[in-house]
Every structure is written in C-alpha cells, then in structure tokens.
Amino acid sequence: VCTSADARDQRLRASLWVQSRDGFSLLIDTSSDFRQQALRTAIPRVDAVLITHSHVDHIFGLDELRRFNTIQHERIPLYASPSTIQDLRRVFDYMVTPRHIAPGGYLPEIDFYAFPEEVTTIGPFEVQPLPVEHGHTVTWGYRIAIGAKALAYIPDCKTLSDDVRRRIRGIDTLILDGLRTRQHGSHMTIPESIQAIEGVGAKRGFITHIGHDYSHEDIIAMLPPHIQPAHDGLVIES
Ligand SMILES: [Zn+2]
Ligand SMILES: [Zn+2]
Image (tube, rainbow, N blue to C red):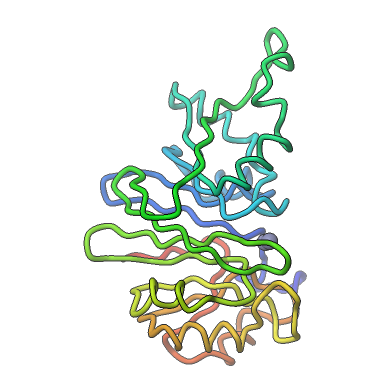
C-alpha cells in the first residue's frame, strides 16, 4: 500500500484540523508528521490545541508549534486530560522548566490546561471530552459542536462505552478509529468501526488511523455508502 500510486494511500499519522467559518483554528493532536501536514495544508494559524492522548504518534510534533508563536506573536493554549498534561510536561520538560532556556533558545510558548470532564468552550466551539478505552490506557475523543452542527473525532480506541455512545447519538459526522480487519488489542477493526458508526446512528462516518493492510479503494469496497475511509488532506465541510 505504501508504494501505491494512489495519493490517498500515502498515510501520515492521524490528526485533525478544524476551522470555523470565521477562521478560528483548532488543531487536534500534534502528530509526528505535524510539520509536513501543516505545510501541505497551509495552516495559517493555530489558535488552540487539543490532545487526545500522549502516544508518540499524536504528540511528537508539539515543538513545531513555535513557528506559530512567532507568526502570531502570542502564546498558544493546549487542552488535554490531567494525565495527558502530566505526560506532556514530562516528555517536553525543556519547554516548561526555565533552567533549560538558553540565551537565543527558540522554544514553543504553550500554556497547558487540564480540561474538566464536561463541556468546555474553546473559541467558538463547544468541546465535550469523550473518554474511551484504548488498550491499557484511556484516550480522549472529542465532540466538537458549533451551533446545531457537531462532529466527533475518536482516532484511537478499542471500544465505546454506553455513555460515549449516548453523547454522540445521531451526530452529523463521526471520525472513528479503524486500523485494519485483523483484531488488535487497542484499536477498533474496520468492521468494529462500521458497527459503532451505524450503532450510534451517525449521519456520516469516516474511518481513520488506518494501517497499511488495505488500499483506499479496498476499504471503500468494505463500507456502506455513508461511511468512507478518511485520507491525508481530506476536507470535510459542514
Ligand atoms: Zn494511541
Ligand atoms: Zn495513534
């Protein structure tokens, strides 16, 4: 799959960029490929960051935010669960411990906030954290609403609790983990993902965090019409 000529088969790490109609820019996860993704998509600014969990593929692009500090002349707020914030402060100790800051050093300027478990307002968005099971850890998906429109982004999970299912019932857009068809200990399979999207009655679904077992076209053939495989650079309007 990785050598396929179909551009949709070139899969970088999972992340999502959400922009409101008035231009508020919310980034979900700073993936290891964030620099490449930001350049390719020409992300003009980052007003806030949400992190789903502290696995390397979702956070190792964090340092690249410093360029946005320079462009915007401001610090950038980052929101995550208390335990994820703890991990980020440990992994990126050099950003938060002043003794590391050498003269001329160029560090990201990020304010870390542990979110409450209920709804939080970030810019124009109502953000509801959705705790989901991801192997031995809890990961956070997010329900992001603006006016009557809502999407949920849950890139890394094995199962959805009844409570999370209730909170995303009938949602406009659900972007959900679907790694492959073989069983995996911490990720949903594509059939499990289809079942979950249909189970909550999402109006449309996108499978993300896809591995390299199948091409984009192979996956389309496995899915009902209202569910599609996501791909790098995919733009969803709502
Ligand atoms: Zn993960
Ligand atoms: Zn992941």
